[in-house]
Amino acid sequence: TISVVSMADRLGQRVSIPGTAWMPPEQGDSVGEVSKYYAPSRGYPQGRIEVLIYEDRGRYLFPLDKFPDTWFLPGTEIKSPRALKSPTKTPTTAKRTRVAARAAAEVQAVQAAAQPLTSPRRALSPRGKGRGRASGATVTSPTQPEPDADVSRALSPRRGRSASRGLLTSPRGSGRLRSPSPGYRRRSTRAAAEDQAPAAAPARGFQPEGTPSPAWHLSRSQNTRNAILMFAVALPALVYGYLIATKSDSRWGSAEGREVAYGPIKVLDPLWWGAVGTHRPVLAVNLVFFFNVDVLFWLLSLLQGSTWLIDPYWTIIPVMINAFYQFHPSATGSLRGAVATVLTGVWSARLTHSYFRREEWQFGAREDWRFSKMSGDLGRHWWWLSFFAAYLSQHAMLVGITLPLHAAHSSTVPWDPVWDPLAAFACILGICIAWLGDSQLRRFMLENERRREQGLDPIPILKTGIWNYSRHPNYFGEQLWWWGVSCFGIIVGQPLLVAGTAFNSLCMVAVTVMVERRMAARPERREAWEEYARTTSVWVPWFKTEEEDKEA
Image (cartoon, rainbow, N blue to C red; front, side):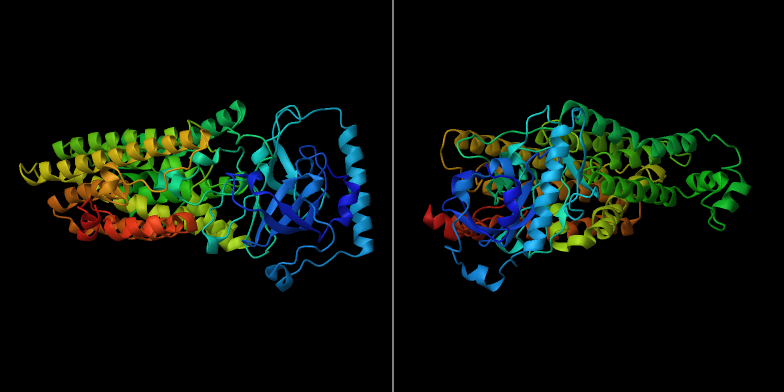
């Protein structure tokens, strides 16, 4: 390993990282240069270096004790055309001296610390350069094993690389380091659940030569804390719903309460909240969602450095909203409402099980890859734009698609012997198609993981089972479910309630485009994917085109 003090002279030096050192292994070496050096901390006693890789313009963080001296190239032996366009400025002698002195002093401080850490702590921010400025990075205790995957995985949208939950910088040298989630995951199960992500471009991680790809998980204590947090954040909404359902204050349902509900907004008045919840349930759902989800979840994401909390709640919030409508004083207790409640519970149970099975029953190990990608694209503005992209947009979708549930519970229109069963059948069919697609996708993931462990090439594209007839059957099943729910609103004479479902479908179209671009990003898989996309339906399961039949 390299001496810490000598790293001051390594800034700007060329490096060559073997392809076998990446996780998963790549063909050929990756050439780059040392762009920054971060002083030691308790989690990284020898410090870290940031390497700019010329190939994808990505910046990767490496623990210095895992970066062999043989990877440094002598002098300027390697001259890449990309490197000549944007060379790293060689630091002055005075700057190298300051870095060396600070590094030596901090190494002594780390070695003198006799009290080991017993829980994750805030790491020193690279911007703070060792002066105690806190970032969201999590440092593990010296008594715990050092995660090999702790190296940054850079995001390069032009190359289709996806941002994993490690330290990463924004592309094109913005220099902003994102914070990791509290834990690391095996890449083979990284982003597959959104679609065919095992076949998607794997995020680039680093492992020392000769070591297998590790499977890092959250510690038990961290997983427990996240689980408690997940249940605790729902308490305000649950308490509010209980108070409305039990009519805790008789004034809420009176003429006085109705006048207050339709009068001026008084957010600090408990009577106003009770009156709104009693007389204007849809407005009450929007208000509770805004404060309990949009604002609270967003603040927690800033503290944790991850938007993970909204992911599991996507499967839980519709159940909570349905329960609010079901037990609301205006509910009619109709058969249609009971059927909607049962179907919503089945849908939520299936999707929640699929989510936590994909996450290996962990809470907060990673966030949605689409938010990771946006955070890399938006750089330092992501902290405030995430409020709109990750939460306010989810507000419109979740509240909008559950509006037909309010109609099902509050309408006095009797059960239709033809259309209501057809709507329920569409809901059940959508749940079954989504379940079948997710189950076949999981088997595909596990098979590719087994092949990697045996040293075999993974299967590039899943095109068996229902995936032989649709490129996104799980998306189709999900949309069919919500359109089936919206049919309940049409049956009771409120067709405008399908606006929320239509908005959700438009968002899913945008997600499909993102996923397919990601699928075709890797050159070794591009030809197979283009052939698959040319002959297979996008959403609706359908027969192969004639071109595919002729080849068969």
